[in-house]
Length: 211
Image 1 (cartoon, one colour):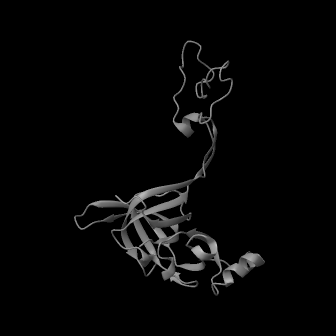
Image 2: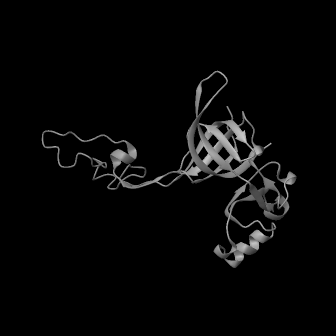
C-alpha cells in the first residue's frame, strides 16, 4: 500500500540500536496532514489525493485559496502537495494522516529543496580542477578552461559545466530506513541525511525502488 506525508525537517541527531551501535538520523515533523482534495480517473484522468500541512491564518490566504481549502472543513493549510497513490479510494476529504502512517522498518523516499549557496564557480559547483599554476598559466586558475573547438561546432555544447547559481534545487534521497516513529509528537526519524535546512518542507512517500 502506498503512503505519503508532508513534513518539516527538525534536524539531525543520533540513536543507539539494541546492539549499542550509533545510527545517525534526521528527525522530521511529519504531519498531521489533511486530505484537501481527491482526484478520480473518471473525472480527472488519474487518481490522486492532495494533502495539506501546517496551519495558516485565513488572513494570509486569498479568496480562491481559502475557498478551496474550506471544502475540506476548517483545514486552512500553508503547504499543499498532490500524491498519486494506489489506495486513494480508502481516503476521504477531511481525513487526517499522522506520522503513524509509516512504521519502523519502512523504506521511504524523501524530497526536499537543497540549501541555496548563491553564485558559485566551477570548482565549488562542479568539482572542476584548477588550471596549471606555473609557466604562464595565470590569472585564470579557477576558471572553467576550454569550452571546445572554435571553428566547429562554433558554439558551447549543452551540458558544459559553468559558473552559476548553486543549490536551491529539488532533490530526492531514496531508500532511507525509518528508524523510529513517535505518533504522540508526529515525529519520524530516518537513517542518514536529507536535503534542505532546518525547518525546510519535505515530502515523504514509500520507496518506489525498494531494495
